[in-house]
Length: 204
Ligand SMILES: Nc1ncnc2c1ncn2[C@@H]1O[C@H](COP(=O)(O)OP(=O)(O)OP(=O)(O)O)[C@@H](O)[C@H]1O
Ligand SMILES: [Mg+2]
Image (cartoon, rainbow, N blue to C red; front, side, top):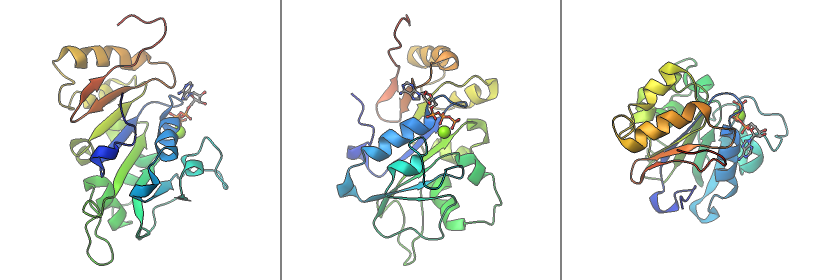
């Protein structure tokens, strides 16, 4: 059984991928709502959230939420989750340099020069278009949760994940991903390998 919050590996970098309406925000909400409080507090960034956030907005499940990245994080922050991350990461390059550092490299220099990873900040990014995600976000990911994705270029990007291309588990995952029903996902984990979902009525 996969521990969604990866408590044993904190801090981590996780990506949540999938087309429109495939279950990304729900997955991010589950992680936020089961986050172990002893690790610290959670911040959700969601450019499209209602104010106050609804249950469908990830901000509903976090200790704090914002529409855009703050300049600094509260000192007890242990998880920053960002929905629609490419909206932010493909924005102006000179904007929010600390935030970009955190998301692109999993590092964030705090006000006193403390490194975000050393401080134990996990990063969770959701996006509809993995191809728009900077490559560095992919190469540093500890886990990638993949909901239904149909675009050829997006699927090709997945092949860059170790074991996705040229292994039986990877081949099975790539066959399943374009037709996964909403709420189902393949999980690629850097340490534990590839997990395929049990979809009722499907034969692998
Ligand atoms: N675990 C689940 N089980 C069953 N249905 C689900 C599950 N997760 C999501 N869904 C269905 O999929 C719909 C879309 O989910 P969600 O809002 O999480 O998708 P999304 O990928 O964030 O979409 P968008 O790209 O539009 O933001 C939900 O309203 C729900 O009906
Ligand atoms: Mg969503």
